[in-house]
Length: 136
Image (cartoon, rainbow, N blue to C red; front, top):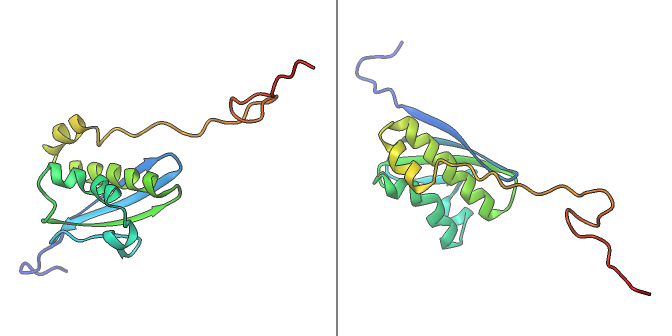
């Protein structure tokens, strides 16, 4: 049983994806900490461009210093992981406040990138690369 004096902390969860990468995002009220797989953002992704990709949805809605973000991400490379985390954060922010949907949709943060690796075709060396033609 919860006492009236205890504050129940609200949590907002969402999933973000890109290529073969999947991220599970949890947003809570806090002071702006971002942890990815148990490590701080700057330690997990040292490249500033990827940090900016992740922080973009929070900056757009002016919640960068007010929300804590915890992420579990797996698969893909570093850029794919950064974009999957961005997608997950944007979806969680919409659950946090429905008014953010219009802002985030206009920036393209809520749209999943559908591009995936094309499969190899029979008779070809790769997805599209054929055999080299030789005259003699």
